[in-house]
Image 1 (cartoon, rainbow, N blue to C red):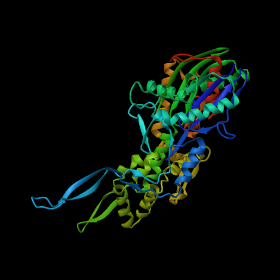
Image 2 (cartoon, one colour):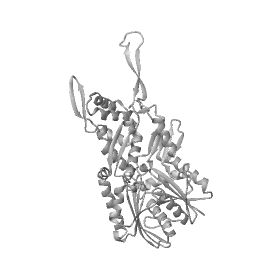
Image 3 (cartoon, one colour):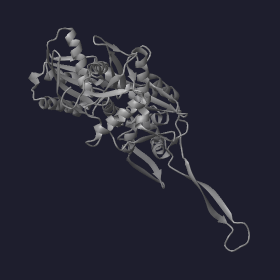
Image 4 (spheres, helix red, strand yellow):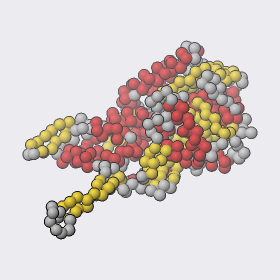
Length: 467
């Protein structure tokens, strides 16, 4: 008998199997256990997943000028001549009725990442893909199907699988978790996963740590796990000793690396794209100047899958006005124009992620975006100022989960730091200040999958209070 675990993440996914002694990570891509949680659909609705999906999207949009065109939604005829009681043919003119200019006819394919963040939002039921409405379940099923096939290749005979989930999915009401889990369960079924058990991600990471600790003769203790990933921050407090593994409390907040990247974009890039600058134009022979309405662009810039919809005349004409006005701000608006028309948004966010990662070790770096001819100095101090509210929220939820466990900070024997965003220096410093000498990093990208495989092998369940 073996146990199988799947960490279906917001940004990346991983899978593992456990034989009772050793955890084996599964290569979801060639020579790599970590797979981007990405789905690409082209105009024929052919599906690609993982790194291949991301690479295809980047290549097919490299230097592509986006042009949105109007859709004909009806035809109408109007009387243009004849009639009025006079003999002769009645003349009419047939015209097309156009809808909103939102169709990018040259778009080769759509890339979907971070769909996990939408699973708990009951308002988001379907996403339109080349005029075809796709349920969220349909957009994540291909990734789970890919993972299941990879498991089949190396772990024959498996039947049960534990799938991870955040303590709190993103959503707007008290039923967000129920909705998200029901959608994820349906996608698992469509992906060919048989008997599925859902298990909290931070608790799984703790199991992985305990498994490693027992190998080094660790006697036991109370563990606080801080799992900070792309979509959420999840925590658990667990007491373990021998075969006893008791979950004392779990908590979490819907803040992760994706949100941090948006904050960096807003703080560093918005001013370099024209935020706060004047919009000058001549109307009826008079020069009119007012603040450029950058707020109308912000939400679309911060969400790279829909940034291309800014390529409409009502958005671009203002930008062109500002470019034509000249002056110091013209260069900023030229960057904004390039970003919109050439669909560079995804590449911008990748540059932000890379710069953020470098600041985990370096004091300063450069946010380099050659596509926009932009190189911005970026320091760890800058990042910490941008993250001030996030860091405050992290401290609050740490105190809250320990209190819920009926403990004090001094009762915690070890703090596990896992997940990609846990490598941010300011996050590490908070943990080291609150729990001096007790913080350890544990497999940031594979601990959850490993722990889920162990939970599957042991048949562990989670009912809100314990495992």
